[in-house]
Image (cartoon, rainbow, N blue to C red):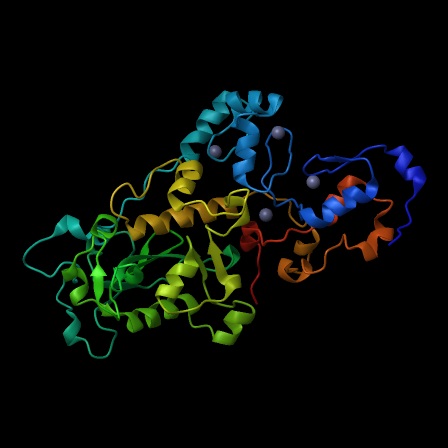
Length: 410
Ligand SMILES: [Zn+2]
Ligand SMILES: [Zn+2]
Ligand SMILES: [Zn+2]
Ligand SMILES: [Zn+2]
């Protein structure tokens, strides 16, 4: 294939530098080819000093603090940079002030989410402290307690299956409602390697538990994985059957929206945040529309450069500054960590409208990104463009979470 190249332009700019990652090319068409496969955009993580774009936060961190850091960037970062969000501040005072808000404290788990802690003989562990035992509720899902009290009184969360009214507190300008979910698995099958969902926790955007339950697996549990789950046989004996849990979870996620509308546009359906949600959903035997899922294990900027996921424990340490999963896993703690990571990513101050996918009329990255503006067929149109112009028209190959705060749902 032959392409018409403007020689004057080539000699004028003897080197062609990518405005995003600063790679340099001798030939213009090599830069265009680079743009075609790079999917640079204003949504990429950037060095706060030189503004170089990176594919992941991990590579920004490497750029700033790795074994071979970039000289000037590393120097400035070492005095004025926040090691969690990697932002650079004007003064070390400003940095100190910022650090307090950037480093988060571990989520204090509501009592209910710590089974082993409050074992008492007078009740089956995990069953509601009030007397709404499973058997005497016929017209609601067994063991469900509907609470409309405020979310703050954590003391009463000691429930087998807690469902709270989560319909309050969603401002219209806040974008779609968000919940975070985590499941704990025990083992089934002859060697105990089959994952069976034994516990589910769902929280709202303000970290309140809106649903928590132990789950009675469909097949016998052969390994409670006590070290990891803190679960014993008696927690699950009278727990809620998996199919009822699934229905309840679906009810929360779809939020009264019809399936087709949730699949198509989302509508009232809630965004589901979590870590490695495919696995959780699989164990709950349910599916959820891909475009409503915000998975911290699958989000490009949070992954390793080689596209392998980081653990939630690692991400929480590196981005939020505290430790999780030091003992038995607590689904509430994991929910909160994933939610906080999501919110941190969502609040990235990315250029508003500076890329085609976010154009005025609520443009949708998912549709626009299917067309690559650097396809060879369109090269003629690109000839007069500067590297900055090229970057401006480049679209990411993933949907940046910052767009969630700007989405206007219809
Ligand atoms: Zn580049
Ligand atoms: Zn963004
Ligand atoms: Zn830099
Ligand atoms: Zn910070």
